[in-house]
Image (cartoon, rainbow, N blue to C red; front, side, top):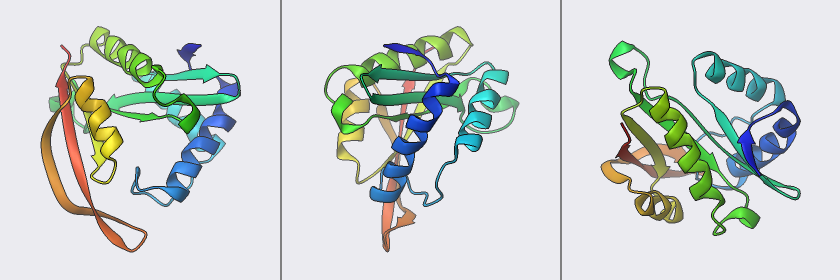
Length: 161
């Protein structure tokens, strides 16, 4: 089931996100998410005409969200997204379905480009985005630091407008 996020999804999304923060270099942050913070982020995105979509299969939940790439009117048509799936949902079309929904929603809102900022160590994430038509637009060496080592950031872009 794919739909906009609801309040009942927030605990599962926080659990997924915090496991990703704690255990991987998919994200460079080490600051855990809270239910209150995620609820506020969802409300903020919606107030700006953006969305957070979830996919559920039994007890497994994943999500994709997007917002403006950078602040300011010059970036009003450039969006950046986040997508996280638990292992049980990977390789089953859930990620593709979420991204199709994000692209469609962003395009309807006037977006011209969609960006992905992917950890250089996340080879599966880079390959996933490439399969969806994203091109590597930049690789920033040693931009992030986590678990005592430097990490590259790969910026990928797709024109959707």
